[in-house]
Amino acid sequence: RFGALRSEVGVMEMPRDRPFSDPIDYSAITGNPRHSRSYTPAVHVEWPDDVPVVERPHPQPSEDALERARGLKEAVTARKWWYTFSTICAVVGIGFGIAESELLWMNGNVPNTRTTALKWAVLATSVMAAGGLSFQMNSRIKVGRYRGDALPENAGFLTNLKRAGLVQEFATDLVLLAVIPVPGIDPTVRVWDAGHSMDIPYTLDALMVTLMVLVRIRYVLYWLVILDPLTDSTSSVYARSSCVDLNLRFVLATRCMKNLRFLLLLWLIAISVSAYCMLVAERPFAFVDTQLHPEDHESSMESAVRMDRFHNCLWLVIITMTTVGYGDVYPSTDIGRLIAVVSCFEAVVLIALVIEITNTRLSLDDSSQRLVDFTYRVREYKETRKAATCLIERLYIVSPVYRKLHPTARSRTKLGDDAYGKQLEAAWAANDRMGLGVMGDAEVMRLIRRFRKARRQLETKESSMRSDVGLQLAEVTESLLSLEAEVGFLVEQVQASVHKLRA
Image 1 (cartoon, rainbow, N blue to C red):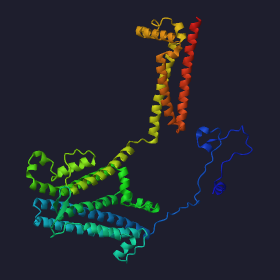
Image 2: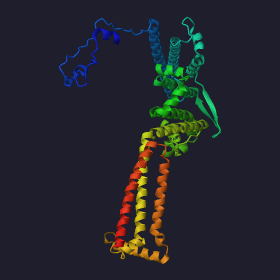
Image 3: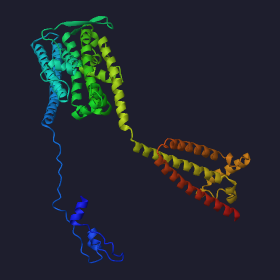
Image 4: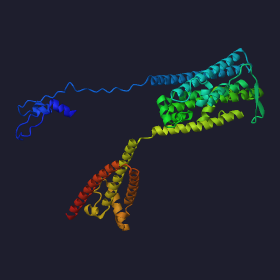
């Protein structure tokens, strides 16, 4: 293309016969009038009109690809919506079940119209949750179909569930939703308590509601997993290419290690559920014990720590899971003690996760850690230099050179300090009496120990920082400059002392 343009519009060149002393019009080359050194007219270069401009069209996606993308997005949205609907129905069913159990207890374990209506409400919400789960499974089948899995539309729902490997999960969800207090069935179950050697009556509704609360926590956790950003479409594609399963365990482990608010939510769920289970386990025994031994519950102290009240059970679970254990309230039944043991193991796991998150958030990055190490290294270096300076000063003061220059110590000490002069003269006399010279001075020995300790700490800090070459070079340069200044100062002091001795 450049050759064709050169033949058409021409290119400005320097003539070969022009001498070097001849001025050249550089303004035609640079485009700046200030570079003009002659009146040679500038060459005007224009782009020719007949040179075609090639436009490359961008590839457009096909209609089939656009339809699949839209269908995948709609299926993912529908999956999240239906599972949210199922979770809300399950949680509302838990609320209806707890209300039915409490109302039955307040009525003396005698069912009435309101308890029966609440049981039917629990059944209705469970059926609605099961329907939402079926629609959610259908949305998951559509997601797999749009991603290329062999899930044809003309096949049945159960066939696609089997091909997608979702039969076991769907059956488990339905079985867990079936754990509800059944309308029209209100028996009383007696459980033998070995600690008190007696049968404790429990209503079947209370046991089923407690079990329902325990098993439906699964839906809340799965709902948090589905709404987590780790399970979006982009992360799912990368996980499939990396052979990573975005299951409940993976998301919970990631969130527990990274998100403190999610961990606090788990703490709240564990404390609330354990407190309610403790209430259901301890309340019948407290009622029976009050009927059998009313004189033991007449005092206000005994009534304040009774385990048939929810706030006492909540207090017991909190002091148990935080490893405090005051001992003012405690479980009395075997089932209550088992719940306390399970709460202890839950607390061990949750406390370990809290410690790990705290340690991760308080840890410094590499740059900050290097800055801290350098700061402490400089401080240790200053301490070592200060200890060396004090040692050199003391050695010079108790040396014969200083005694020859200043025979009377009281007149030559710091600011005329008479006490220091007396102490120095006593040190001179002790050194002369022992005949050990400067090494017989107690202050010198103390300063030597101080200097050795500071130097040892400095060497330890230096050995821990040898990995950073750039920082090490900067420290060496600083050390050389400081050492050079100190050596120069000492040389000047020695020369001044020699001149005084000669004088």
